[in-house]
Image 1 (tube, one colour):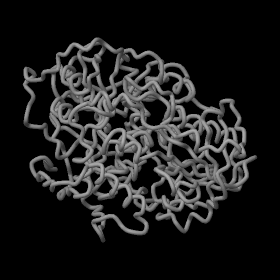
Image 2 (cartoon, helix red, strand yellow):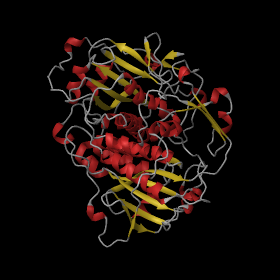
Image 3 (cartoon, helix red, strand yellow):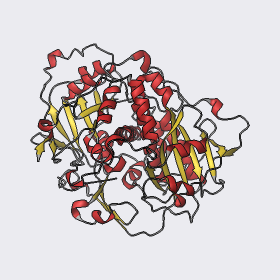
Image 4 (cartoon, one colour):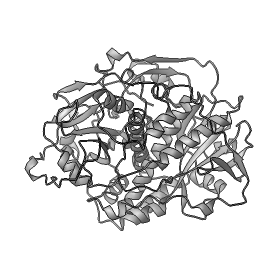
Length: 561
């Protein structure tokens, strides 16, 4: 094993055009990638040189956390957790914090026959699929978690890295970095959870497509944190706009390899003290080493340019206070045909159990049994409530920053076709005809049969308006919002006993045409197949015993969603 920091060259950034123009160009090429491949052309994945799914920091003290399966209090369901998103903030106990952090830990091993391309490899111990409560595109897990504590409550002062392999906190520093985070975010708190991206953990497989995927990964993890805290009556508001460079210095990160993208204040708001000078903190210029097994880490020009374009050097409070543009009311015609949705809850399990049972279906779906309309309604409402939850201290709009669509194929009481979800009235607005089975010809992978899904849920957003409101970073913000909604859909499907699978291989332009989006600034961002699964498929699902969760996981084991 080697230290990647000593080997990785500093990427050279050419003089860029307008960051907004660069991001829009990337989006256009990304959405049309089935007709024109993203560079580098003829790229092939070197599976023998893939990075570890876990980021390990050797030689540093690690504090084990209470087992994820055992640290939940009560039997809170997803609707309770969603209501808790707007609860007053308070400092969580160590067990409550472990519940949030553990949403990105390994919780068991899965082995089943499905349509994914790694079925045979997973049968060997070295190719085991170690499940996690939060999904990640391609099972790459590029999002890292840091905790900065002022020393209140159960955790001593310092900077910690969450070790996903051992479900513990590795102490990186004993210094109080909260003043630096406060200065970087203009938000004072007793502690902060911070999500960062280690791009090589994803780009080794997806190259230039990486940036689109990792933004959604970050959103999925932040949603998990918020729901785990909300289930315990702890409200939270993530910050998407902040001084990334200052946060990197406070965490002692190497900016060539890792970038902070979300800061979540943990605890009640406290008066801003203006203590964030940072000069007296003795910030180190030598990032701590990270174990990396890849012999040839690479950077990709398009990804590097996007990181530079979307970098936020300082929090612009005037712009950040403006909520992301909501979907205009005029886009739902007044005389359009509507279909009422059931309003009652359909949860069949606690949120904890939904986290533990969450998985991607990978072709297990069957349209032989229609999907229940109440389950679809439950999922749509959950996605909408997450999309409405406040972002940042100044967001009070109460409107979702995404629009949710359904392309129905086998849903009881719902004719086949495309529908827009109206969150205000909790009903579906008929959008026009759409043939989900025919979408197979425009699906780039082979791990799902579009003709077997009961429905496809689609998230769209106004990307141009986001960039206009927030600059180039609006692309990242919108991706994070999409990831949050996707995780809500996963947990809702698990609670309702349905199969679900988020995919990015669907041709965006085809679906845009079905939904009538080609003449405006709204763009489809992510697709989720959903529906009942085939019965009694052979599958092994071994839960990780609570006493084993903090032990070492062999470095050769590659856990995937």
